[in-house]
Length: 523
Image (cartoon, rainbow, N blue to C red; front, top):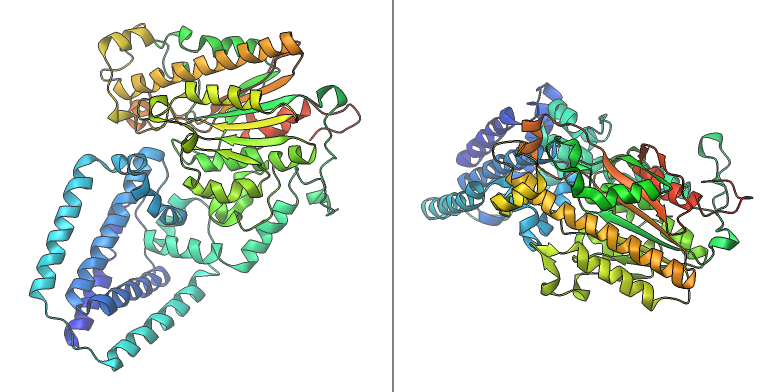
């Protein structure tokens, strides 16, 4: 038994070491945070020891877990300027279902070498360390200790104040503690009730009755008679932004169709988004719900994790109430981010996912923007009995960009001269960005043609969900602008463009405001 407690104490003591290397800032220890971490490490240790019946192995397993936790957090911070948050753990299984989207950001060497070392240590310790004597007293004692430690840790975590800034909270409480505090408070009923109230007061909920000044109901939205048959297509373009802002050597002709569309649009400009380099679902939910990321509290980091069990009002549900048929097109698995659960709840009638595409539709590792464009046009032609709302989520320009290769000839087509010594990631990004520009050209030409031939009106909105993950490129070019870009365009061509920077949560309402009756107040 003495070996058991010595192993436990050594594991607790070691647990503070990995976090000394935590980025962007190492935690500042105090008695409360140290005590909370000791409780959490003890819980992990006791859980492992119940399974393997070995004290040294349990200590080693917990220590390796804490090292990996810190390493993953640091890798995420380097790529996305955000350390690990509690909701990342909920996406753990997705890393194994879709490894290309996650593991390359850790680096090739850690992904290959770390598992070999870990497996080798596990086998060695299991062979050398004898199992503890199996006694009901020890089993019951461990279970009771786990329950007691968890209860105490939860009581300590609930009243602690969070800044909603993972970097600051990690520095204040520690990485392991922060994951636990966030998780406990996110599961608290008071927080759930607060978010439910915010969802009920969405600008897209025309039935809400709360008359408080700070939560006044939105005006009733109604499509004007002349726009009753106006289709609406929204493109959430993967990592789209005007990359010419990065460096003047990037040719202006790269986004020729984008420029042309801006000149003919109703409104265009920079877009404020709640993500950098990844976390598409944050921008996506902000657009669909019209809610600021901060309004979601602890759910802002992965909105779909909890909100699928709540009533959500969205642009889709509002348009559906106005007689629209609502379709989402996404050339990836519908279960990714739990979209298959939450999109029907938000008012979508149909979800077209990767199963409606084939391998020949790929450009690079993912389904091309061209294939998505063709699917949008196909869906438009197939659905003519009702006005149509299409929300398309592209994949072609998804990272990791460094896994794709470029040629010198290709580089010369995008730059007047290379902006940096090794622009491979940027060149790969520009390759796919050029295809996004072609998507804009194809769709606008198609919608103009349908208007000329049959008078079918269409509103097209395109926006970037976030800037791409290119940390080395940004560092070399000293680029820190977090904005993506957007435009709102109509095929009637009677547009006087307004250049305006807005936030992603306002974009859906801005799009609809051009279609409401004169008697209806704008959203």
